[in-house]
Length: 259
Image 1 (cartoon, rainbow, N blue to C red):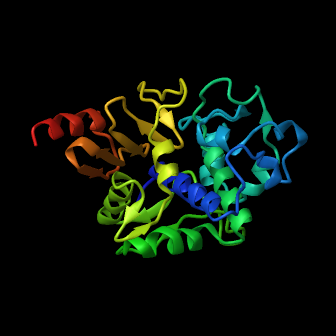
Image 2: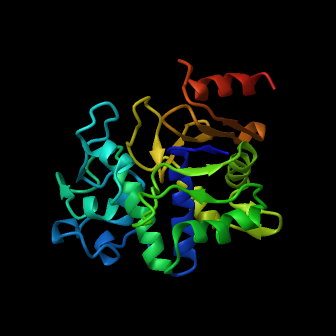
Image 3: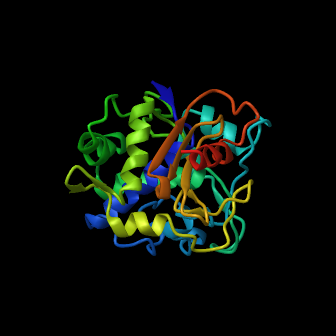
């Protein structure tokens, strides 16, 4: 069992889609303050859609080396809700892409509050059990006392379970006779809808990287990947502690051409 790091962001996106389909969330156009009452009125214009596309305009420093900026505090800290109450807005939403993990943490809280269900329990019921996952749906929290889930980074599972999640999206959210994730949500998630591009230039939609050729992937900072290539009916999973200097997306795309 290994941590997925930011691969979990794509799973959170799926849970948002399920919660909308079940009527717990009205739509992606809802303001995040409808669910996150602790945020000030300056957050009212920010929608769930803005969080999904990393276009929220929230002031947050996504840096992993400097221990005094936001990301290390959110990763190693023990009271995420107290940090969230200190958040500020630096620009209007949907102006530009800015990859910040706090967007996904907020999405996780929205799912919990909308469904009145702990995030790991909702994952277990809506994805883990229907797919027959082999490992427990464990999800790291900020502390034993606070029990706020690190929605941005930390689902822990085995390689076959991550591969099953990739296959679920390969099959448009359909699994063993059941529509687990709404098809329209999957299709929207895998469509390039704006000019958002990650640090490598890959289009970014709804917490997934989406390529012009139809391939798509979830990515973790230390080289964790679920890479799906629909035209070849392939799902690649790569786990590890380092990227080893390899562009794993390009590598898998090249490998797929040989199959």
